[in-house]
Length: 205
Ligand SMILES: Cc1cn([C@H]2C[C@H](O)[C@@H](COP(=O)(O)OP(=O)(O)OP(=O)(O)O)O2)c(=O)[nH]c1=O
Image (cartoon, rainbow, N blue to C red):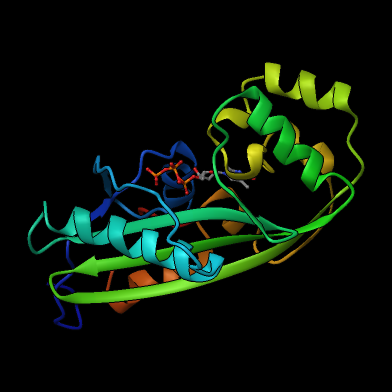
């Protein structure tokens, strides 16, 4: 029990994304990673924001079904550009196609977060606007060889070498990376899960 009497459930992150784990660690929340597999298929006519929110909910619910009484955080990130929804590329050609589409354009990055505990579900959706400078075919080909695009929505990582493509960002940097920190902290607070205890042993410098 916490000082205010409310129970604080143990937290699991239902994600294989190392970025999400890193971002959650950054704010000092104790958690364990839970491995779940949710099929990621967009339904006919499903709007991008509806799709990403559904996947985050499904990940959180699938995790919660495995750890009764605990809190489970799920998230999903997609890129939307010129009417296309971009997820993780299948291969080099697919990544190149995505990066050519993003070149010299502004796109949206939607990240949905869902927190599930027993029957309770808390959700949020963060959309950021990212503008890329023009990319050459040569640098797109060389970027693939770094290994960075393969496991990232839209085929790039804003937190890595992909940062050199980004001319402008309006929104949440951590959201583009896969887990919007401020909004996640708010969801966790709904279940009384605090990020850090401001006492002598855990004080942040
Ligand atoms: C746009 C962008 C995405 N990404 C990542 C975040 C996500 O890990 C990934 C999008 O794929 P997701 O399907 O959202 O997540 P995932 O498959 O990596 O992990 P899981 O489903 O198990 O939670 O792209 C970056 O790391 N940097 C970026 O700049």
